[in-house]
Length: 333
Image 1: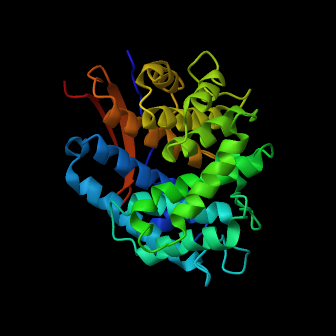
Image 2: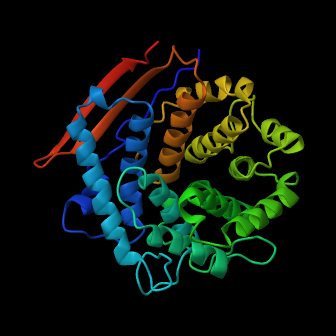
């Protein structure tokens, strides 16, 4: 039976210090701190679990997200892109990541659509080449936050997939404001489709697979490529890279949910569960975000999960000191 064991220390008081005190930390550290809060609230919202915590805890979490959002605006440059510091070159990856997190946070707090869509416009007009590929001239300092993208192999494909996913997730908000959005999405999709069958790296196959699925392009040859890249049909794995493997497998799970290939899903969910990966810790930004997003989507899309046992412990800062809440529940049958 698919059992999804969820994320411990999702909202980690330690790593959110700079959001609770006088704002400090650069435009990258702030996103590292904001990520677990946004994704944990998204997860608990979509699985309707807040009554187990008390709704006031949700309010505390939303206040943290607001602080993170406000703090991030200090690193928005005149061109609407983001970087670790105002005087650094704008970063394609960081700007796309801000778009992704803000697009999700827009369901939770008030996000200025001009901030979100200005960043989208910059990515499209300044960073996309005619062949659809996105380029990076301002790599992030905190390389530990970028997950499996850190590997240099197939970088054009993994960056283009990462940006395309962010554009897709912001599409509902930004399509009315950004005329070239759909054209840009199609160009990136076509670039990925041209190279997909030749990809070697399981991580790239997984992230590009999700980007193609969101763009209605994961048809049979591509789906077969995605599935045949899995080890034992349950994980997208590179030796000795636990965090990358959790991240990549989460992307693959999301891709399969988008194309409704529910038959392939249970062994993958089971594998994610067996990792006992509770989120948090150094270098875990992408793995935490993706495993939460994938399992939230799984519970939404796979109606028959009566046997799902979820164990979440959330570490929320209160006014005086962080308090840990641990709960166990059976999902309603």
